[in-house]
Amino acid sequence: MRAVIQRVKKCSVSVGDDIIGKIDIGLLILLGIAKEDQTRDADYLSGKIANLRIFEDENGKMNRSLLDINGKALVVSQFTLLGDCRKGRRPSFVNAADPSRANELYTYFAEKVREKGISVQTGRFQAMMDIALVNTGPVTIILEST
Image 1 (cartoon, rainbow, N blue to C red):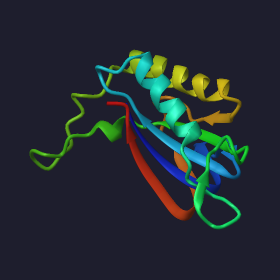
Image 2: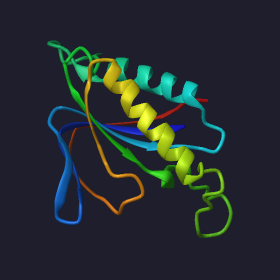
Image 3: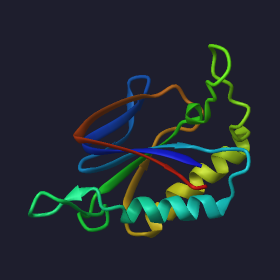
Image 4: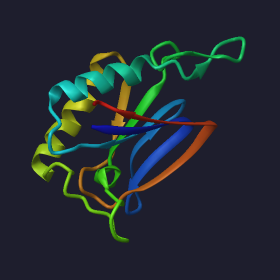
């Protein structure tokens, strides 16, 4: 499981003209799910992300977590994070989980983040989405479960 997280002042996800998820201060979490991923991968990443100290404290140091600041999360499934570009000029997605399993783990991951007391909005699985965000810092981190 691979996540790209971005610290945001605000963020929204739309399908067509409809905003389906919107947060203010918190994290945009782009989540890619691989064939071999299990619930333990989502358990690990949800805990890591909720507690990762990437928000500034009163001294300007990255020393506070999403939980510490009572921030929100916008979770968007993004299978293209599993794209392998080592050969040729077109990414291969053979390592991405099949859609039914990926949706299951995506939903599970979002629920695990909610269980930690974080307000979570989500995108729409397998939809063409537009994401608007203000990345603050900018802070962007790539995490993997393995």
